[in-house]
Length: 343
Image (cartoon, rainbow, N blue to C red; front, side):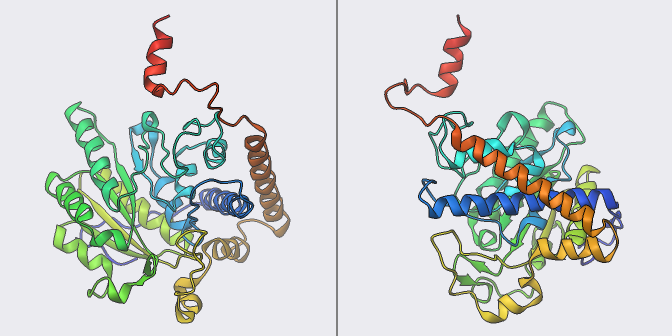
């Protein structure tokens, strides 16, 4: 982690063994679940695109898993944030139901599988347009300010390509001017779809952009779960303490195509073999064993439990009812609730 833009940056708070093991479980759930969804996609069971967070789970979890819904925190997810979504409170069963288009899911089979959220629980539905979620989270933070609330933080996930959009600039500039308690996670996975970072920006490190907005900036190895947990813990604490927006740039590599329809043949061999081409799940597992956080037997038991949990969850979703045009009344879900509540 680099020092923050401001020298007053708080020292990183160490992460306990229990917290690290819990985080490993969280990123493993996301990895195994998305591998299952990818398999179902290839079998023609998922309608729409599938965009995996393979290689980005540690960075995603480290932000969302350390936000606190009890304090009114909010989280704006991006397309590769299954680890973060689950950590923030999205039931894995709801995610499975949405991918499979089940009527039992929160979207009732009506919308694309990535445009899902829990607005009442502080996680607005994702907007596809790059960078747009910053302004959405800004809005929730300003609304909380007007209501006289305090101690809340908003987290939002973006990518390296999003930092070049107008929406990103306007959103982060607004957050800086309003000194909002915002933490922006920038996953620098080295490619904006197939465009390498050398053709995206000329600065040495994306974190250099933080200074231009007057916000604190941090650069972290996004493949290192412990480092990610520490840097986000610092950033969240600073934002909560009233020190304004924090921007964390995670250096990593997307270990898959842009979507499951993309073979990622444009990713260079150099990038794949480099430090940031490491698999964050494998790196975390190695840390657990090397540092003695768990024994081999304990770790295998945890992994077996996660595998069973994911398989049971997906199997339940597969067994549930599909939407039927013959039984659907096509009214808006909010209107339907209002009608029901009148009787």
